[in-house]
Figure 1: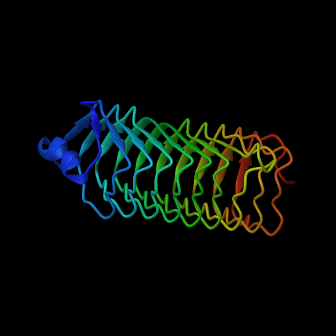
Figure 2: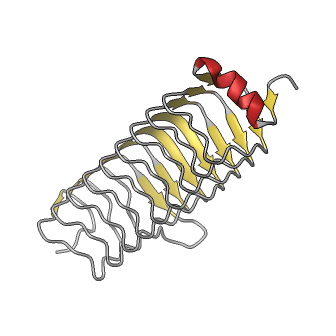
Length: 213
């Protein structure tokens, strides 16, 4: 098929003009490549190795990553919209300062991810372990955290210092040892959330359901 790219050279040729659009990248080893400031629209990455790839300042719309290795993927200052990550391996993802709009992480472990200062709107974290992830100074708007497989989303030891949550769904989430220092939670669902050992100095719960007293 003309739009199926199966080698790093083919991907590099398509990106020569700074844009990758309307194609499938299948089983391609792109580890460590630099695609900073690239524009990626309506591209499906399937079972490809994107470990350590740099997408600094890149933009992606309608991109889908399925069964990919994305450990150490770098997306600082990137803008992702209508993009999904399905059954990917996403530990140590670097997303500091990125903007994510209608993005989904499904069965994609994200432990030790760095989302400091990120802006997230309508982002879904489903069955995506966020152990020790960093969201300091982040804005989370209408984000959903769930894990149908384990029964509850896991955010153990994650840090949300000075983060702001607006209408987020954290019902039943496991938040053991989470740092919410100076965080603001507005109209969030915390019913059944486990906050044992959480740091709540300066934390403000405003019109939240299930908030600790």
